[in-house]
Every structure is written in C-alpha cells, then in structure tokens.
Length: 120
Image (cartoon, rainbow, N blue to C red; front, side):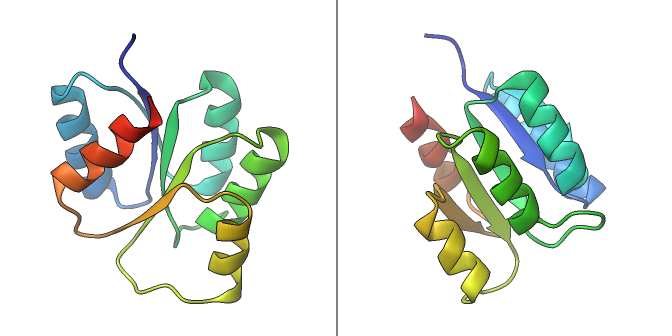
C-alpha cells in the first residue's frame, strides 16, 4: 500500500510549510495550495487520498472549495482545519455532504496522523 497523498490547503505560509514538513517527515506525499481555487485545480490534477483545508482563505474559502470538489468527486475525503469554533449553516451543510472531519488549530500531530491513517 502506498503512502497517502495529502492535499494541504492554507493561506498561512508558515503553517503550510511547517505542516508540509511534518507530513513529509512521516513519508506522506504532500501537495500544497494557498487558497480554495488552487485547491480545486490541484485536487483534479493529483487525486489526493485526503484534503486538509483551511476555512478562511482569500479568493475562494474552504466551504466553496469543499462543495466544488465534492460536486466533481463525491467520494473526496476532506477535513477542515480551523482556528475558530464552527457552528453555522455552511458547516452543517458540509457535514451533510460527507465532510470527513474537523481539526481545530493548533492540532496535535497524532490527531492529524489518526485522521490520515483512517483513510487507508
């Protein structure tokens, strides 16, 4: 079984770099995107096993990217990452449409690892 391919989406360059480094250290294949629009494009190109996506981003937010990806790939495994407590209509709608999980930043690497390994 090959290592999971992860699409990591965040507009915070430091977070993106640090998380990518940790994931690569665990031998995961990592593709990064800086906003939702880039995430949708890279999802189509790379068919990752799991997407870790920030919610608040410029150009296209995590919710919009989630629904665009799910429309084309209903089985996509998408996990939202956020520094905020989420309780709104959009989040509920995402859950109803197969949201794979939520990680609250800063998250524990073991927590992240558990979510990634649960995909395989």
